[in-house]
Length: 146
Image (cartoon, rainbow, N blue to C red; front, side):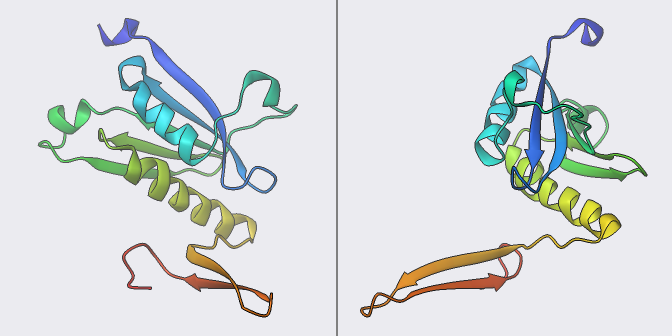
């Protein structure tokens, strides 16, 4: 029964640790690879890393079976941009769109509300033969032919 199913609840910081947004992922235990993938991409918090006043502004709910029962097999990611929390519903088995692009969408939305910018870019750092370090950032989405 779904009501009795084991869940994984993982706190993380969406974005950079010192600048990010408190967030949670809620996933069925049988999709633990999703929470593991997210922790590799975003970095989950251990219990002793959760700061006083941890208040999630974003929650990712992982519910892959609904892609079959409600969405004709399509793997979807749905954003519900509420006033105090950004909910992301991951109706897929692949953590990429939810754990990477989904978190980017969360950061874009919250940043717009709070007045800060989320960079989506590629970077490269080059050391010249003269020991000069040059860092180049190219703004643009994945697949944007940067």
